[in-house]
Image (cartoon, rainbow, N blue to C red; front, side, top):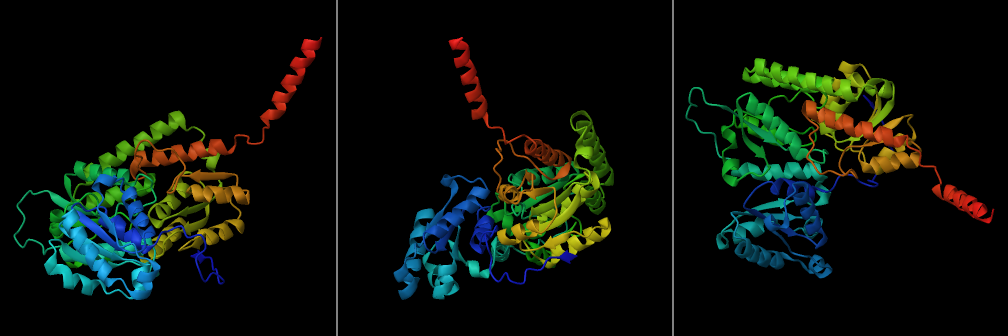
Length: 462
């Protein structure tokens, strides 16, 4: 890989990924009947709230308590304040589990969350789970891994009894929320629909609107599918050690026609449902061709040889490379990924070798790296979020596709990016942004209005 080097970037400038606290909270937000005690200044509770926003969980279902640390607490210590809050939260929320989450402030103090939880466990009804998630420990993806690790203690050993003959196969879906698709739950719904058609049951979506009872039984599933290329690898491996194999791990996620076909065929082969997989592929490809033949006649001539930069997470960004290069005939010139993991690097390297291309690559991209890479590259378009759209305008790059989170696009309906219909959703957004880029923004309408007023005055005098 042609990885760009930034030797004088010792610190992050304009980080695009939040801290570990939001990652942990995004995991906890997907579990029912739990509450969060965040040991932090009051601002960190807003970070936790944003994780619930990412799940679209309203305020009536959020149980969050904050120790609201002040300067004196940082200097003098706040252990007793935390203990009092835990007792109050247990009495008020009456949930089965309390996650006691430490932040940067708790890290600086050196708060021993585990000791506090051991001391209070016999005094409360909820199970206390300590998680130190200060931003010093990493970004939101690292936080997701921390949150998933905290769930391992809830998982019971698999039932040793043999399964009944003819019983449905069951699958766990891991981290559907670790995606920059603004309506990521639509991608999860597409995966569920495909599995259902193959006669496979989704046992649990970890963690997406799941109960603690379901979490306890996830080791009884027949396989796990990680729906992220950015996080969740360690958790998937831990489940594998408990007898739940991870499948489809060496393939990009199903974004684009070819990637979706590859993914579905591998899924069908694993479960012995090849004929159903081929039927889904045939129907999906026919739908894409039919729609584009009627409504996207200029789609290939429009994009052919357009040099594009992709700025995304690895979950959406890696599969997009093949979709743009092979199916739209664009040239991926720069790849800017928000995360960095050995697994994503291996998958990306395999994809680039298979495609025979050598774009410039950046991992762990922040705002400064993205702007610098785009400034030094020669690209016609940037595919990313509304943030990259503003950067593209500043740098004089005319075309920017605003398809990822955070987006300024109005979204009233859930739109998947996975699968064949999801690919059409992406193409529609890209097509509309392409058209908008060539609409003139230089017309000064006031000039015409003044001219019309003068002509009207002259006619009146005559």
